[in-house]
Structure formats: structure tokens, C-alpha cells
Image 1 (spheres, rainbow, N blue to C red):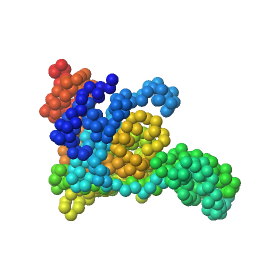
Image 2: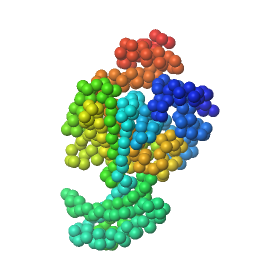
Image 3: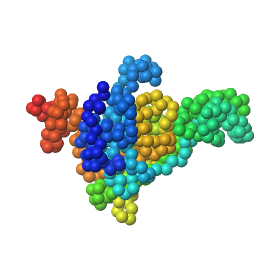
Image 4: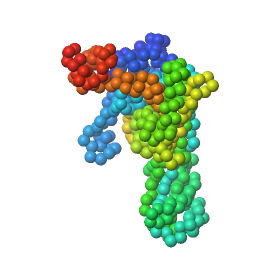
Amino acid sequence: MSPFNKVEFKETKLREDFMKGSRVKGFYQLSVEERVNLIAKDVGLTHDEVNILSNGMSLDLADAMVENVIGQISIPLGVAANFKVNGKDVFIPMATEEPSVIAAASNAARAAYDLGGIYTATSGTIMRGQIQVLDICDPYAARARVYENKEEIIEQCNLKDPTLVSLGGGVKDIEVHLINTVKETMLVIHLIVDTKDAMGANAVNTMAEYVSPFIEKMTGGRVVLRIITNLADKRVVRARGVFSSEMLGGEEIVKNIVSAFEFADADPYRAATHNKGVMNGITSVVLATGNDTRAVEAGAHAYASRTGRYRSLTTWELNKEGNLVGTLEVPMAVGIIGGATKTHPVAQVALKIMGVKTAEELAGMIAAVGLTENAASLRALSAEGIQTGHMRLHAKNLAIMAGAKGDLIEKVVQKAIEEKDFRYDRILEITNSLK
């Protein structure tokens, strides 16, 4: 039996005393069992779905998903509270091994909640597939011939995925680029594909491979690479939120946050860590929903460099009321069907917790967390410094490393907090003294 079923959920008390939509007073103080049962009641998880949260997947399923399986590694799955996205209260599952990420997102979301929460918009679900053609003697004429045969190229590609086409997706257009390299001028054809609720890599790659012989015949060249690009600049999600100056710590801290953003936008050394803070939030939700973290991360960092210099993915400014206003713009190639999203049972439960029905809605949720996580990071940097809050939460890991178990863990952490000393050697001493 799952350990989550040992504590009976006191629905009336928690709803009256603790809960207002996604706002849960003292959520972190609840036991794991109470949190799970609260979420289960709120979104209607079944008994089997609750069990999945604790048991994950079977080794047989793991063996079917990847090669040479010998086991599996578990990543903690938490939920961020206090989120309101496009007017909807939502708990957002986040999978991460890093302390403070989920707490930071939840705290910053609270600062935006009463000012409307986070609003998002997406540019669609368009992905690009690239077909590289080499050894062309007349690249400009070849480019023209490709455009002349555009409709047949699109038709051939769409024959390979009639299901996607029936849902309104498929290849919608093509682009033809001439890329000058040190050796030659390459012809690179972009298939502009609407992948709808799928991330789309398999569909796009299949189409690109299928149409390549026709491309070779038309151009007189030699096709080599036929693959999707993760710079999904036609699948961009934007997030915007207003964060209470008072809840962030006041006017000086808010001004420091804006200054920190300006630093990141001007200096790639700062931007790298600044954007890592954004991706702490984004990657946690992408992973929790079984999507491709590497594809999303590659697209985000490439997009941050689109001006020729690596810059901040977010912008921060003050509005006329003196509150902090943040925006995020980032490619978001995620889906709710296909791949691990459909095969991993925990990913399915995570999607149910969020209540998302489309890939665009999921992209909005992910961007909302990315923006909010960045607000939390900048707030910590602009106030007490990043280590104070982070190390308070990291102290649990250190206590476990030192041999603390059960109730002793919290006693060790509390003693370290009182002393403001989070060195491992000191936590080891505390642990041994309290055993």
C-alpha cells in the first residue's frame, strides 16, 4: 500500500483553514501524505494515480523506453502553490533535485497572485525541420526550383502523417536558405510544420527523410542532414506578471532587481547564471511532464543569443505603482501526446494535476514558472543573498549526509538555522551531539 494513504485527508478543515484556490497556507508544513491527499482531492486523482506518485514506473516500462536498462533513478516531485495563470488557480508539478527551487517559485507566485497572477500568450505550435543539400553547382537557381515545387513538397510531406493533417496540422510552408560555409554554399530547406499537441520531433524528422529523394532530384545536389531544429522560433511562449513591491521587500529591493536584470542583459557571464535561474523553473516542469528537457534548454539558450550576443530571457521594470513587472519570451517545444509524456505514468498524473488540455496551455504553465522562478532568484540576490535561503533548505540534505534520520533531521536543521552555520562539518557535529 502507498504510504500516502496512511493519513486520512481532513478536507473541510484544510479547505477552511488553509486553502483558497492554489493559495495554501503553510503548505510546506503539511506532511507528504497530507499534501498528496490535498492535491488528490483538489484535482480528482484516482487511488491508482495517487499510488503512481509514490511508485513511479515499473522496470519493464523503463526497459521499453530506453536501452540497456538496469534500474531507474528517482527525482523528487513537488508542487508549486500560489500560482494563478491566465486567471486560473493551479498547482504546478516540478521535478528537481535542487533545494529551494520549488519553495522559491511558490513564494514569488504569492507576490503576483493578488495582482492578477501570470498571463501568457503563445505564437502557435510550429516546428522547423531542416534538409541540408550539398554539392550544388547552381545554388541560387536550385533555390528557385525548390520554391517552384513548393506545393508538391508540402503534399509529399503531409502524406507521411495523415493523422496530424486530419487534426489541422502538417507542413504549412517551406523556406529555402543559402548558408555560406568555408567550403561551399549549402542549400537548407526548412519545413514549417504545425505539430499541434505533440512536440513533433518524430513527425518532422520522418517528413524530412521522406521528401529528401525528391529534393535531390530537383536540386541536383546531395541531401545529408534531415532533422528538426530545436531553435523553435515559431513556437514562442510569452509570460507577464506584476509582483508586489511590498511583498518582495520594498522599493530598494525592487530597484536592485531591475538593476540585476540590466546587468544580465549587458553581460553574458551574468546572463548565463541569470538564465539558469529561469531554467530552474522551466526544466523542472518540462521534466515532470515527460517532455524533452534538452530540447527546451537548447532552444532557450539559442534564443537568448539571437541578437548575436547572449542576453537575458526575461525583462524587469517598474510600473507607475512602483511594483515589479516581469516578462519572459522563450521557445517552448513541448507536447501532451507522444514520447515519454504518454508512456510515463507520473507524467500523465502531472498533466492531470495542472488540468492542461493542449500543448499551448502547458507551454504557458511552464513559462509562468520560469518567470516566477527568475523573480525569486533576483529577489534573493538583491536582498539577503542567494545562500541564506538556499542553504536553509540545503541543510536537510546535509543533515541526511551526516546520518540524521526521522525527527532528528528537523532538529539538526533548526539548530543550524539558529547558529546560521550551514557548513557540513558543523552539521555533522550537531547531528552526533543530538543522536
